[in-house]
Image 1: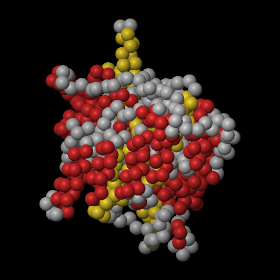
Image 2: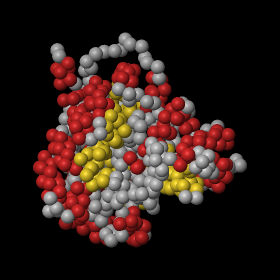
Image 3: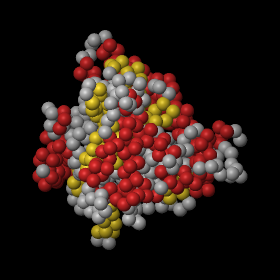
Image 4: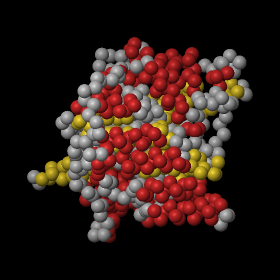
Length: 602
């Protein structure tokens, strides 16, 4: 039997249930780019068209784009990884970037090459359509949905059905602003209170039978001004899921602020109107939708279970010794599934970055180790391989070592989130992307990933106030800006403490501005304070939560007390005393705060 035969008999025979792609969109995009270059298409119209198709503007240039590939519910298959690897090599920069919304981004693509990427994606059933612009963005689902011990049922089929219903749907093509759905498995995972529509699966006992449904949260979101979502009702039956979604979207479409770009997300509408009024409007609108569209408008939910079959690997390395670092990786990168003998493995990336070679290698690794034959992207810029047999974990670790994907700490605070920052974004003020990498490298060197007290804390970094790095819900969050000493500018970050996105969701409390080159010392100082003051059962997350809420009984009673202790660390030197202080990470030129036009909206 050949290696090719072995691959064919492995779970790579598992094919995606839904083809998201359309080849004709690639042809249309190529024609439109040509017309734009010839001056037959005005700039604003082309920009809206480009964004609607998932091609985002690149920092300070109109000749390049970022292509944002949607992975509905985070699902991605081996041959799709391999295609994205190929497209990255041919048309991008030989790497890709995993976002916090289960998208994969290819940066610095020449505008004329974007259509070729669209064509390649369509060949493997993927699309970037409506990954940007004023539409329903990628429908997310927790990577643990289907394997989480605390879930009532797997919400993945509902996320996929919702994504399929709204993709290219006329009602979702010209909303006041972007619109986001998050499905999850349980209260602990999925950030359901921080999006337009967040959903947690529930089961209700009714007349002796079990009924599926959801706990739905509306009007949350992160941004320059963030809001926590409100629970719509105690229980929403599954048959009302789509009617509720349509009702909410129709209200937003009619009443959302189309004139004021800074206030046209749905969370502002909910806040301005007041929750009770908005809630009642949803109930009335849902009744109208149910009465007028119930026959023709339904979600096509495919609940056929995936085939779980142990893959046939090309070689069996079970006799090899276990490599160094395995125990550390096992502890910080894997979780037990509710299915016995299986674990989900989270692959650590540096601020979401992965090379094309690593993307290609993941295709074979999924074939060789995932019994469901696919991977899931997460909410924190990583990749999850599920249904890995526990006996196979040492061999998987060895394979990941070979391709540079075996970093530990994926599920700890040593894997910070960092948005793309000034590496490509028009709005960024700092290189948040590089800062996240610097923190990760330093904290792994200090082996902080092995400290149980720090494991449930998080660090999230945005390059501007717009929250692409989710800083508002981090244990320790940062967003970028500029400051100056005299005429000399330096990059700094507004730090917040105590944010979280679990059942006790709350936004972080503003603490102090921290110069970019002092962020790492400040975090280490906070950890040191925690170690000095903690109670026996405290984690960093619980301790900071207590301080922020004024419930700490040590001499650190408030954020102000932390701020006083940190002050000496953040006092800026003169440029003569420390020239490096005035440079951003990854830059050897003078810091500035020049930005371009944002493209978060079409």
